[in-house]
Length: 367
Image (tube, rainbow, N blue to C red):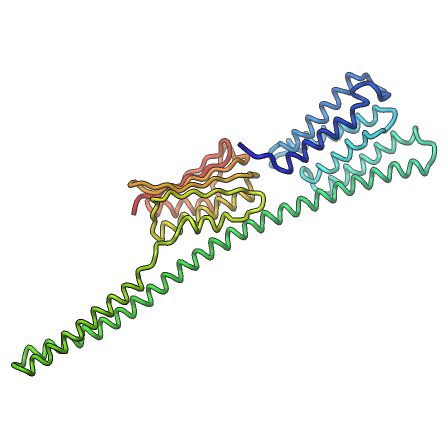
């Protein structure tokens, strides 16, 4: 179940305030120039259009059309009242919401038209020019303040998402660097082992070859030297093999490091105790988790992401699900396409579903 966040609470507060400022018109207290039933219908249309424009998909023009209906309905509500009261607050809402729906210049146009509507209604009811200027100026400043505050909030949210995505990418890069360092260390040790064994085996072969052509005490001396070289060689091999015994990379720890302290997204990581993967498969799962978290932050508008890794004799499966808006027909971008190719190269596959949130399933066979 999706948690209620600050945006939902803000929308609920806006709804309550909108109903509160419209109470005089809804209950017939305010003086209207149109029938009350029509005014109520306009108010319901305004609320529905405003909420629908916010909930509409980001792509397409439908949200712009619905937002335009909300703006016109708000104008009609204010123009059909003989006295302003607090009704211009509805126009302030349209200005604040415009930042999320239309370009900035369009939002400023809405502010200008809203101010013209307020002036038209306030002009006949206000005899003093100063009072008219104060009323119009007050609502103009409130609209601009709401517009600029929304812009600032939107930019902050975008920056937080970008920082969270950068954090995930840097953590994944750190894991790959650690794996690279381990690989380099093993390569260095293997070279030392080759050089060491090659030299000592050469000495051992010469001693035994010499002993084969001698008799008595002289042969025994070369055999003893060969025995000493063999023992030293055995000790060196044990020491070198001990250095090569490094632990398998901790997949759960690597995934949790990427999912830690992400603003606006709660990520849970569950790795079954029996899961064991080699470096190549571990790197694939880390890369998949990085891509999944980054896409969720940037595109899914989700609040929760659940990632589990399970394994059995048949292989290992990574399953990731979020509670975002999903996509009916998911499209593989470069990142997901590259991940699918990586898992296919390991003998597995990667599948994506978009109904009821976004879901990614990656499988690799047992090593």
